[in-house]
Length: 372
Length: 196
Image (cartoon, each protein chain N blue to C red):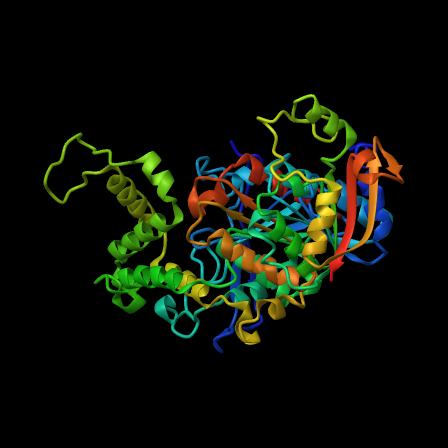
C-alpha cells in the first residue's frame, strides 16, 4: 500500500548545453521527475532523493494505469513516513543517462536522429549533481533541506554537499562508500563484459538491430544481485534446497538459489537498458571525490556546509561499514557535523531499501530535527 | 534524566569553557552532551554503541557516532578535542587502560567518573560477606556489567604509575559534594586528568 497514492511523472527540458566531466557536451537534455508533498512558501522543505544503479524517478506511490508499479523507496516516503510528505516536498529524478524518460542512450542523438546508443557520453556523479541542480533551479529550490540516497544515490548526496555546499543543508549518505575498491570495480567489469560480449550488443547500437543483449544483462544482474545480498540471508532464504528435492545430474536449475537468481536476472533484463547499466557502473567506478585532492577525502569534504547522517549496514559487504567510517572519519577530521549509525540488518547491501525499524526510526528522528 | 542522579554532570559542565570541543564516550541519550552544548556553548560528538541510545541521542539533536569503545578511538585524530569524557562507564570496560590512553591521545584532557568501590557502604557489605549493592552499584554479582571496579586510591595509583596528572578531583555521595575522606565517604568520583 503506497503512502502518497497516485503519482504522475513530469518532464523538464533543459535547452542549455551541459558540459560533462569527460569533456563531452550534452547539447540539451530532458529529466523526468516526480514530486510528493508540497513545496512550502519559503521553498525550504525540499528533499532530493537520488537513485542507485537500477533506480529511477519513481520513488513512491503508484500510477493510475499501473497500480502495482510501486515506487522503489515507497516504504520511506509518504504521510507519516520517515520522509514525511506532510512536512517535506520530496523530489525523485531519473538521472542523465537513464532510460526511464531522461535523456540517455535510448534517446535520439540530435546529430544523427538515431538513438545515441554507445555514443552517449559517459557521465559521472558530478555531472548528475550538475544536472539535478538545473532541476532544482527550475523548481525554485535554492537549497535542499536534505539530499538523500543509498548506494550510488548516497554518493550523489555526498557530492552535492561538496560541489554545491550552499544548496544542501543536510546530506544523508546511506550504504555508500567514498570510492569503489578494486574488488567493487572488478565486479562491475565482469558485469560489463557480460553485456559487451553478448552477440546481441552490437557495440552498443543494438536498438537499430531490433535486438537487446538480454543474456549479458541477465548475467550482469545475477552477479550484481549476489553482491547485494548477504551470505547469511542467502543461506537462510535458500540454503541448499533443491527444486525437485533430488539431484538431477544436469545443468538445468537444481538449487533454489539458481532459480531465484535466474528469475531476478530475467526480470531485470526484461525491463532495463544495457547501455544505461554500463554507464551507471562506470559512474560508480569513477566516483572518488578525493581524486583531485591527492586522495585526501577530508580535503575534498572541507567545503561542505551540510550536516551529515551516514548510515551503514552490518551485513553489507559490497559497501561495508568500514567504507562509511572513512567518510565519517574525514568529516570528524574537519570538525564537521556528522552522526553515524551502523544498522544491524540481515539484508546485505539491499538493506538500505528495507523497512528496518531502527533504520527508519533513525532517518525519521534525524529529519524531524531538520529546521525548515 | 534527573541531574541529581548524575551530580558529575554539573562538575563536568563547570570544567568546560564556551566554544570548547567535547567528545562524550558512551554518551547514552546525549543528555550530558546537550547540557554542555546548551549551557556551556561547547561543541562536539557522542560515541555510543547501543541502538536505542543512538536513536535517543539523534532525537536529542546530538551528533552521535555509533561505535564500540572497546575498539578504541581510531577514527579520531590526536589532540582533536579539549575534553574527552567517560562518564560512569570506565568500570564496565574491558580495555580499561587502553581507553584511558586513547582519551588522553584524542583529548587535551580527559574527564573520568566512576563509582568508588572504597565507599564505606561497599566496605560494610564486604565485611558482612557480600558483594556491594548500592545506589551507584545497583547490580548483583551475577548480572553486573561492572568488570573493572576500583577505589579512589586505586585510580590515584594508576594515574601515578602511568604518569597521568590529576588536575582535579570531585567526589560525591547522594548528590552532595564530599570534602574529606574521599575514598571512604564518596560513592562517585569525577577526575580531570591530562598527560604528564
